[in-house]
Picture 1: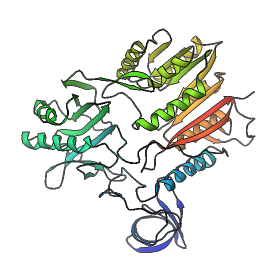
Picture 2 (picture 1 turned 30 degrees about the vertical axis):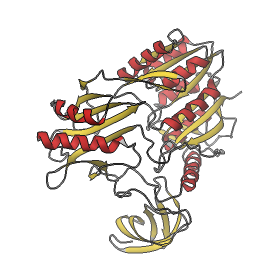
Picture 3 (picture 1 turned 120 degrees about the vertical axis):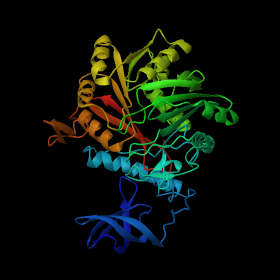
Picture 4 (picture 1 turned 90 degrees about the horizontal axis):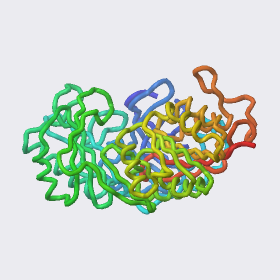
Amino acid sequence: MNKNESYHGVVAYLGSEGEGVINLTEGRAFVPGCIPGEEVSFTALKVRGDVAYGKLNEVITPSPDRVTPPCPVFLKCGGCQLQHMSYPAQLKFKGQLVQNCLKKLGNLDVEVNQTVCGGSQYGYRNKLALPVGVDGSGNNIVGVYAPRSHRIVPVNNCALQREWCALLIDSLLKYMNACGVKGYDEETKKGVVRHIVGRQVGQNFIFTVVAAEKIDLSPLAEILDKNFPSYTLWLNVNGGTGNAIFGKEWHICRGQGTFMGEDCGIKFTAGANTFLQVNDDVRSLLYRAVQAEVCSPNAVAIDLYSGGGMLTAMLAGGCAAAYGIEIVPEAVRCADELARLNGLSHKMKNLCGAVEDKIGEVLAQTRGKQRVIVCDPPRKGMERSVVREIANSGAEKVVLISCNPATLARDLGLLCGSLVEDGAQIIKNPAYIPRSTGPYIITSVTPFDMFPQTKHVETLVCLRRAK
């Protein structure tokens, strides 16, 4: 295949990024916006050997699962990958994605349950984080990064966000244009405002402007007053050059900085940097499922990467005790306040630090007790030392929550013995015998559609200790 030339073929299946995979005589092509079974034409934008990455030109034979995307910038921005697919087809794809990753990457051939969905396919996100910059003419823009780049695609709204997204974008641009504040240009390192971050907690809002330097946000607050009856406004100063959204310097510009909320019977406090799942409906379904699997009067729950402590509190309510380990200080403070608000301080302990540094301490404190480990790591998965600690813990059950099927497959493989460490590498275990080799055995795998219209999927895996 040659760059910029057009080809046509039939989509065989979807890749891990939600793109169509087309097998041709000349090689294999990956083309976004396709559905298996469709005959399509495409242009090869990038070619590496016999592999091409293309742009869809025409759907010659549409799939019955094809629908019209409601978003005008679908496939131009990197936020959604599946708006062109019917929702049942999306759910099926995500279940297959999890199963394929476990088999190919984790050496685990296990049954995957049907994908659990919530109430809303659009407008479900309780949080947004949008880059701010300037266009080629120097005009301020707010948008979403284009796929595999930091080029901002301007938007005035987002179909995945709630209705307040458009109000927030409009308010920020009015403030910047009226006050002569420029968006940040990553190439020239000039400009001021880098990101706008918003979160809804009940009927309240937490807004954060991320800027390269300290600026006056009182004019923005006056604009926000007209659209948001109850909000708090932060300024975060990030003068670095990395990909992290937040810097270490925080200033409260309006309000108290946090708000109280309630979910699954647990009162909680959330701040600008507190981790909470972005889909309230699916989060409740997921956490209830974890609670049902873990909780018993004699169990001691150990919640790794515990965020703001909501799940830890739910576990504490149904167990003899619960420990949470979280590295973000603000989240740990919120978790401590959550324990106090819910009358759980006597049986819920929150530790601040890296999981790999604190897990040994908690395991030592709970030795001899009926331990259950719950783990919800970031996309990179667990550190290998954490996996080893869990494997050697003797915990009766282990429950993993993951937003990345690839790293989930790796961690599960190590826990189940289908993968082994070979120096710095992780390889398939040639001596692996299903359900009898490793310290833990998988009892269920359930995908949850936390992120409709996107390639992402949350997965709940339950394991029991091998006898």
